Image (tube, rainbow, N blue to C red; front, side, top):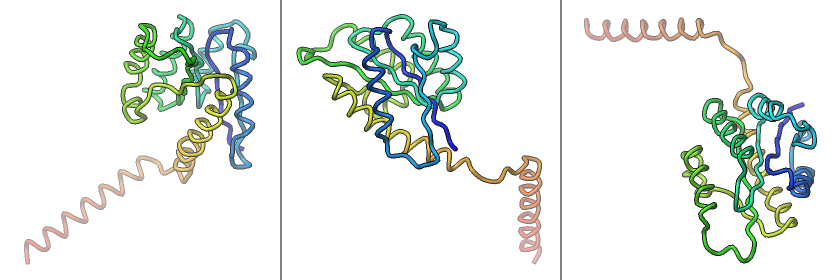
Length: 195
């Protein structure tokens, strides 16, 4: 059984949004041997060190829920996830930003949020061409989360896990093979040169 660990980050006031992200995972089209484990502040209590440890050591995906502002704790969790991603290529980071109908112009806070994201994940943002996924209401969040999580899990995480499955070959053996091939090629070149 393969497990995908997800942490849902964001202000404690986003309880309904976290429930919607949890609901979205029940609609994913995943292989039978894959299970999803989701943690959030509701599961880990008020101990920030548990959040940080889970993000750093267990998460495959961290989902951030934000509005026009990002609080200091969420920012810290984001930077931790981004640092871990840069060093370990995980966790993947998904950001969902509520965008009300009257949110037409970019505010100073949104500029700061985009700067934070771009600074921490420049190469990822450039490839994806976006900073976050916006949603207007909780129902649209469900649809967006379902789509983004399904895409990320099936097209990136599970494919990556499949490519890591195989026979472990000790590095010393690989080096001996490389040395042998180098010597064989050099001998062949010498023989051709001598003829």
